Length: 370
Image (cartoon, rainbow, N blue to C red; front, side):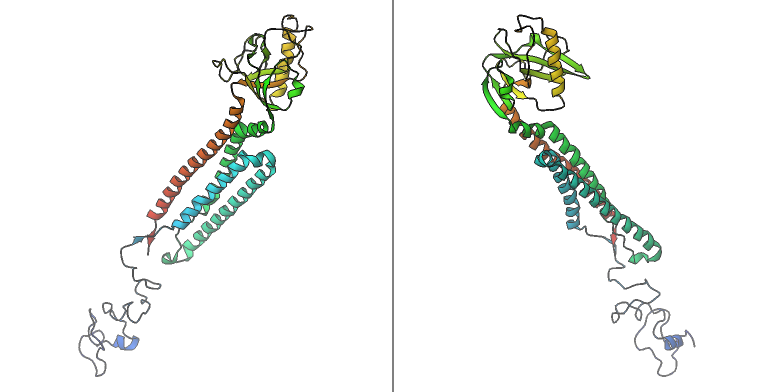
């Protein structure tokens, strides 16, 4: 009888003990094989290494499938790689724009920026392809075969772009503030004990100049030319006698009112021992200082005690920032540039590590193994 527990015809006895409601002889088992609901003996996934039968979870059986889920292990190598690439690109871009390459072959800096942009587009395109494949698989692949691993392509595409732009901005700031002047002044000559009433054409290649003892800035004959910014000039003198040439000028921006006799363009006004000058090498400022000198000529041309032959003679004006030790100032430009570079690297690395650790934790906590 179908499904009975009575013993059936001879030769149809069970070949092994069974458990559950189908204990005993079964004609269904005789027809279709040992697949009745027997508590798992005939259908055990561990029996002869067989695939689990259709009434159970589909797909190849995994021995840990029915255990408590565990977190996936993080790929430490991948995490190091996604941190290293943006950091290296940021460091390279900042170096190219901030130091020697920008000063001597600026076109290579922009080639590198183009390379970074292309690399960013490659990673973003790869991220788009992965996302599109995931959208397709979500409706066509069983959940237990679906690849739910988060990828880092979107992160790499975004951070490569950001690191390149940040490196460009910080590198330009370093170059404009420190290294541009440093490289220019390093190529110029240093002169000591220069008489400020000398002709300027003999010192057109001057970078750092130490004037003769007791040289000073004649503040009483200072003047300023205003064009949005006030460009202040004052002659450098030695003694009180009238002179024929005024080619050496102490200058500065927005450090005077523009009216005659007002000038406060000193690195350290309280240092009375200062008698040095650091050459102004910014080509964008020099034309305005020359206009200020022309204005001073018109302002003081009637001052016979100040000028010989009744006019201010400045055929080769050279402009300086008045300071105590111009050579030391040049060296400090390089130190400040290096310090800014290293500090920027440290700050970038700190924020990058924080972001990567946060993303890694988010990926890890939302993904189970099994």
